[in-house]
Amino acid sequence: MQSLIEIKNLKHSYIDTDGNEIHALNGVSLDIYKGEFIAVIGANGSGKSTLARHLNALLLPTEGKCVVAGMDTADDKNLWNIRQHVGMVFQNPDNQIVAAIVEEDVAFGPENIGVPPAEIRTRVDNALAAVGMTEYAKHAPHLLSGGQKQRVAIAGVLALEPDCIVLDEPTAMLDPRGRIEIVNTVKKLNREKNITVVYITHYMEEAMQADRIIAMEHGVIKMHGRPEEIFTKVKELHALGLETPLAAQAAFDLRQKGIKLADGIISNEELTEELCR
Image 1 (spheres, rainbow, N blue to C red):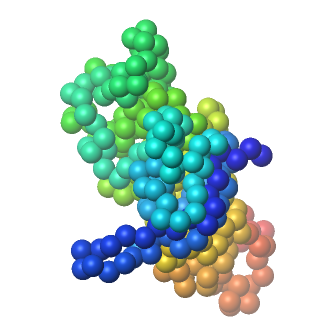
Image 2: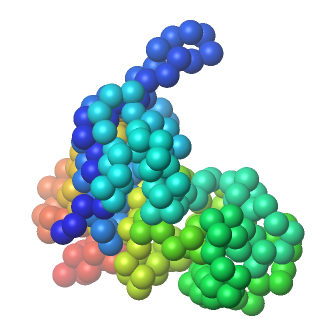
């Protein structure tokens, strides 16, 4: 597989309000491949959001390297090219929506990078269609639900035609229905458009949808692997201050009681099938 982002011994330090030096990232090495869907999990303060902000040069390394599509994020001349390759979606869509009409908001990014008007129209239409928001093109964003606003924010990033979208806890402010909307939208973009997704979350059910999971603690990667590899390590996840999906926890508890179950159970469907057998 082709690496889109290469992170080598990445360290990030800053001084907090009390004058203490904080080591937010402490030697992270990671390759992110084109078309991959990665979920990054960790307790508060684990470094996952700091890592996310390095992927499109919102933060720069204290030590080590972050290379995006062959471009070093520490080189100033690469900044705008990197941000066209990697788009960011944050927790609060209200902080990303800048226009009074949905389609105008989606057009904002392409206009700023000098895309011709006819091409902007095509990009806006395609981006809204991709996130299922075409019928809301003429609506005012402030009248939309939280999940719809977040889909508009994602469309705004899509209109820039990035190779990768980094979503930093995009469902943290949404209700369960809104969370499902966003996860389904992201999965569709990854599968149908081959967009690389880096998804920061503290919801384990959302992380289960990824191809690969990175679990962080104190600025280092503690575990990485496929969902069925990570979420069956119940004790290790608890030690990181993380919950496990309900089915994985139930399967673990049943095994502790002496009941024999197949390995790798993490979903409700897998647990139901195994119990019925």
